[in-house]
Image (cartoon, rainbow, N blue to C red; front, side):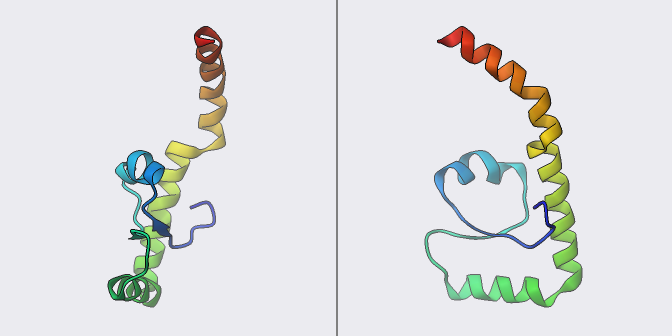
Length: 86
């Protein structure tokens, strides 16, 4: 996301549960690459406009949900809650 490149992702459990619902535009696989995966990647790589649009979309979502600024704001809260639980 940070480097504004297309993403191919395996649908691992954490991704499927926590990241996929955020709306990233990716080509995804479920453990193995199929002919459809190859078709999707070929289409994405062959279309500069689509590549740029997906990359910018993902960059904006990454900045919104996974940025260092967001981490700086939330980390103290997380540590406070972690201390209260222990």
